[in-house]
Length: 580
Image 1 (tube, rainbow, N blue to C red):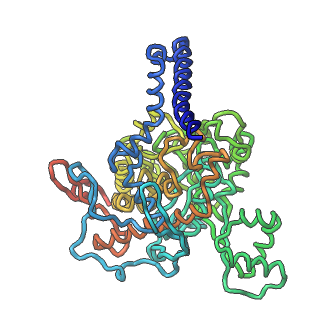
Image 2: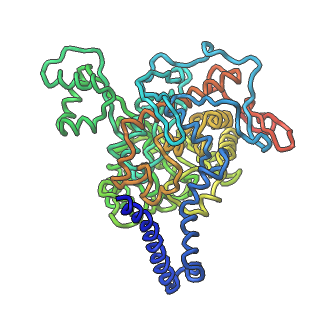
Image 3: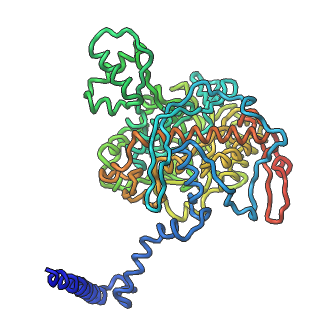
């Protein structure tokens, strides 16, 4: 018996060595004969190591080589902050910052007499019912955590401080949560990702979600149900439905249909009308891009399709996408990511890349753009805005001049920075087109102020404003509200694997392949979205309090100091001349 075991132990490595030699010989001959790759032809076998290291390079750099502040577009520190906010509703660290304080940067100006929490103008009257994690044990290769139901404060603006988009519209949009989910289409994202984000916004309350230019999907319209105090219900089915929802709070309309069938929706509506249950949904900003998805029929603009979507009760505002920071052009959806459902929602064929035109077919100058804005406001009674990117200090002169001349124009302007993200674009566009968000934001705010029309529009800022300190600086530079996209993706599990365009996202956020998408558990990730939003809102209030402000809506340029590499400092309201 022992002899056989010994013989096996001797033979096994020899067999492995023989197989390795055979494989090496096979690849040597194959590589020498091929004519496609020079490195393999001149250095067979060893040349393959180059491709292997090239393939695993991003992961090697992210986890082993880069420091916590080096990774792009999201460094490890930022990703850790987002993860802690989503899982623990906290951003607390120990020992101190890892930031490089020798480089030029913006700093918030703390007050000698900061505000206490009880002095803040904040609405924390209704808690957010969510789930948080607690670490039980953390080892070298594992972390044991327990998830438990919890309540956290929402950190809403008061009614008096609410940011009202389109106050003169028939249906103005008051916002009490300063941070919302930026434009990411169903198609660029999987249906599970859209569900997790939309349901997270619904749980957090107060915030908002942009649909992206791909149109409104059923997943943007997710409904969550919670039971109210028991009321008198008449039928046995109504009582069973109420009892089930009471036992399963925040159950979605999708899960209800899976369990009870499509017909359950009518019963849900009936029981909700009786006041026994309550539904929660995300407030949506319906974005229309140059491809006109959600506003077209047979490939052309269709006003009937537009009004059908824009007049949905979940839609609170409409955004015309003129540009995007990462591409400053229409969107690109690779054919690999087009499913039959996406094909139907967008009205595009299967098996072909979808590239939106660089410019809208409906207008080609400022007058025609304003005509469309006013037409859509007339059709919906809702605020209509535009999304832009700054290219120079003169980017918004024509827009502001025309707004002043006509007394018309958008109710809000979304300004995206050149560092903005995307599911797919061209390298040269992502690297060079469009100014970073802080520069673009200041140009937009100052241009509108100089023409005396700043108070007519609200400004929404986006472009890697992932943490509360960056958001606070953006508010001080002129923003009214903040958009986040990649931070929202990180909150539901994004690993920064740079595979958004390939349909092979390892965590299922941007993949429509079932085996990958299944990794994203909506019922868990939606709470991380809600926790992240609430924690960022809390961070804004705490930073405001540190600067002596009762509300983050009071941030202005006097609360930001710019420090250069020579240690010279200048408060921004003194450094920059502008007309308020």
